[in-house]
Length: 53
Picture 1 (cartoon, rainbow, N blue to C red):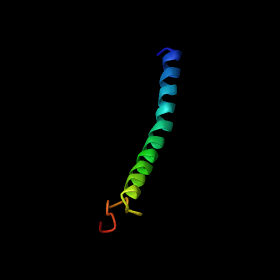
Picture 2: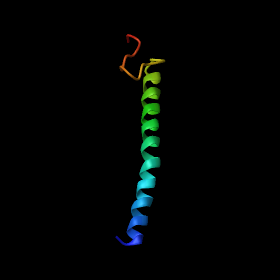
Picture 3: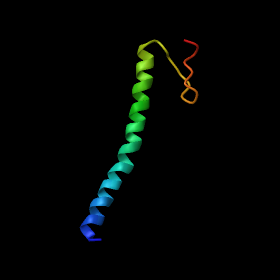
């Protein structure tokens, strides 16, 4: 495999390694913010329970 293809794939893989966790954290934060706006102050992420509301 030519060196520039290996470099290109490594740059793409590095971007994915950084982007995926950032997107997951942003999605969680957005969901928590939406629930807070609806009046649900806290929620259990593991089971999806919303304090009985």
